[in-house]
Amino acid sequence: MNADMQASDLAPDSQYVELAVEVFAMLADATRVRLILALREGELSVNALAGIAGKSGPAVSQHLAKMRLARMVSTRQEGTRVFYRLEDGHAWQLVADAIHQAEHALGNAPGHGMVPHGMAPHARPEAGK
Image 1 (spheres, rainbow, N blue to C red):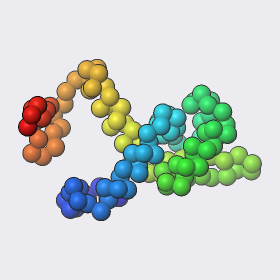
Image 2 (image 1 turned 45 degrees about the vertical axis):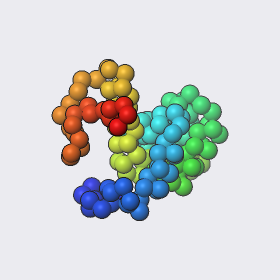
Image 3 (image 1 turned 120 degrees about the horizontal axis):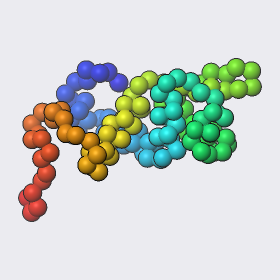
């Protein structure tokens, strides 16, 4: 995706909505989120990722295989070892934004001035409207 997407790409009827939902579904797993956070600094082996995620190597390999099919991670082989890295920064940015949203939802983060165009800060729909 392009950082300066056209407004039509961000419209409710965008052709990308269903694909975006698939991306969110791929990230709707704590192990995968931990893997993305671990890979933000660079490539790691399956064994290193398993240790960080607190999961078995085979379980982590299955998650990584799905993430690879979704083009979130890519691989490099060195002998018998496989190293994984993030394909680009988009998945990491989604995870970082979700974590920041969680911090805000729990009241553990200060407010900030970024508000989408046309939306009042901390606007909430009124009941019954």
